Image (cartoon, rainbow, N blue to C red; front, side):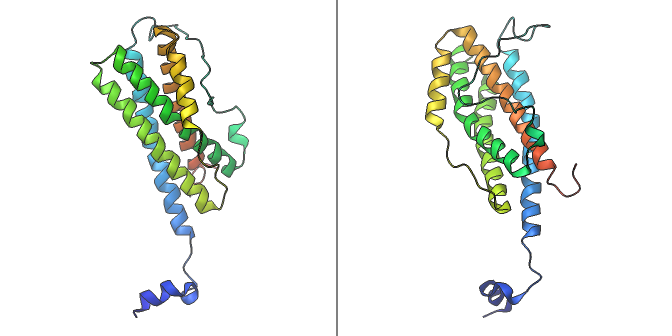
Length: 202
């Protein structure tokens, strides 16, 4: 048996081994992913607005803030919560976004079938939200914090799909809201992880 194999069988064979470098690497990697997705989320929102026609995108247009089933923007007091609780909220929101983004993509496929880049961005966003949510859950597990388990995605998707049946304009507004929430939660996740990165903001 090699010395390397022996150290794996006996965790105390080398007392200098620490889980901290692994945790720091996981946090740094997840933060980098969140930072990249924040940029993509902004591009998605701009692309979405471009394909909705007037009055979307017009100066001064303020769409009604339709409620989104099971999901709201980060609360004003979010930044003051303990780190683990903030990440739990981030992971929960990220788990709800994929079915919502899927509903928006299906509706846009009917309204704008030639907007292939928008449809691709929406599909990518759903997949990326799942990936970031899983990475945040992994950070929580590494921190020894409790995760909140699976969320009722089918119920969220059903509620969003019902909202799109109310008409074209409400469905467009719902899509705008979902894209906006995606940007807000990915950006919030980036900020929360940034506070855990060594050398990051306190």
